[in-house]
Length: 309
Image (cartoon, rainbow, N blue to C red; front, side, top):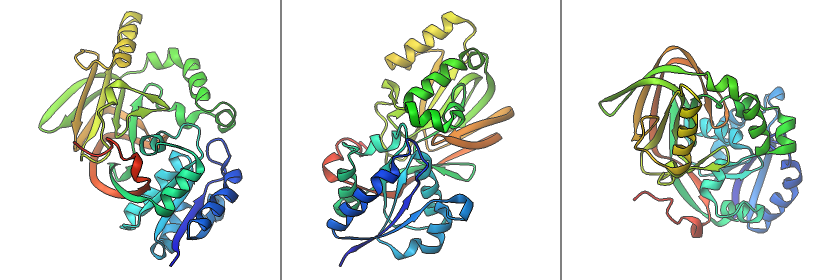
């Protein structure tokens, strides 16, 4: 019996190459024994990941999507809210594709199709910020708005380079950014003025691998928190950059810890980025980890050290 796949295509995501991938994807999945029902994501016509999965999601063996990390974020939110336990599949067509790089040894379309058709379901942890689920990162502070503020045309032309250009252009303003926050986790409280705060389940953010996140595991029941103290001068900036590049965690400028639950409290509403998209503004931001809540299809040979230790 053919595997029934619900496939959502976001033609406008990332570099805009989903349209070129469509025919090879359908051909590859059909050859591998899948029966594919494809929907384009057209929000203006009421065709969103959430609406499609709500109406049709229970009738398939796999729910797959082609788009950027933001597209996958919408799929995850729909799956979690519908309480579906159907495995998902992901073929990235975004500019950076952090989450896919965490999971797959190759981003070749044929290998990703093979994972959907004949791979194994891999259960991983999902985070939740004030009721919104996310796959791998939520962050506030300097540079976090760049992902969703960068013009889509620039992303399509330059990919990750567009983020860098936007970051450089906003550098003076970002270095002046600071927010006073208290962070409660595991019976402890951190407090300070921060230029950046992130909750991650990833070894890389915005296409850049960080030594600080190198030990992250996608299904250990914990997310990694990273807090960067706001610099007072250029000497502090240089020191912070060196610490982040080297992976040191024994610094007054950079704090890291693992947690299942944490709450950020700030003096004013703070905007969050969630999986590269705008995630809302809050004074009290509560995070919870849902351990092994979602299953994604992967090729078994790339499991490697992604499992918890």
